[in-house]
Image 1 (spheres, rainbow, N blue to C red):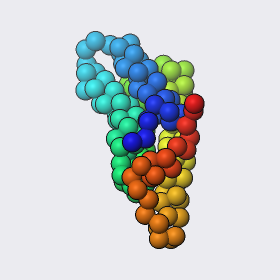
Image 2 (cartoon, rainbow, N blue to C red):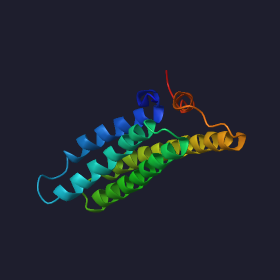
Image 3 (cartoon, one colour):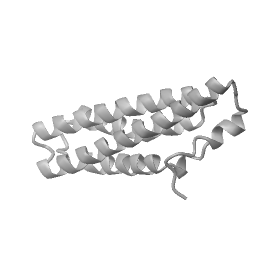
Image 4 (tube, rainbow, N blue to C red):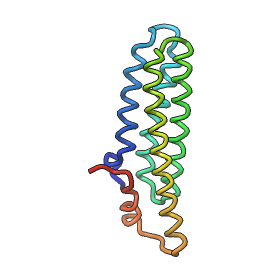
Length: 144
C-alpha cells in the first residue's frame, strides 16, 4: 500500500481542505448552510480520493481515483466562485483559495499522467507486477 502521507500533492490537498473548513466558518451563520456543506465536502473529497487511490492494486485504478479528485477540484473552484459572487468571500481570499486549488489540480494531473504512463509501460512489456512491486512505482511526487 502506498503511503499517501508521503505524496506532496496529498499534503497540499489536505492542508487546503483544512483551510476550507476554517474559511466557511467566516461565512454568515444563516442562509448559506448548503454552500458551506458543499464547499467543505468538495474540498475534503480532493485528498480523500488521493488516499483511496493509494490503496488501489493497479495504476489504472489509482488513476480513476485521481480523476475523481480532479473533478472535486473543479467543483471546489466553482463553490468558491459562488461564495465570492454572493459577497460572503472577499476577492482576496477568493483569489488565494482559487490559485491554490488550481495548483493542486495541476499536481494531480501530473501524478495521474505518471501513474498511467508507468501502467502503460508495464502493459506493453507484458510485465504485470505483483501488488507490492506496483506500489513502489506510485512514489512519484513524494516528499521524504
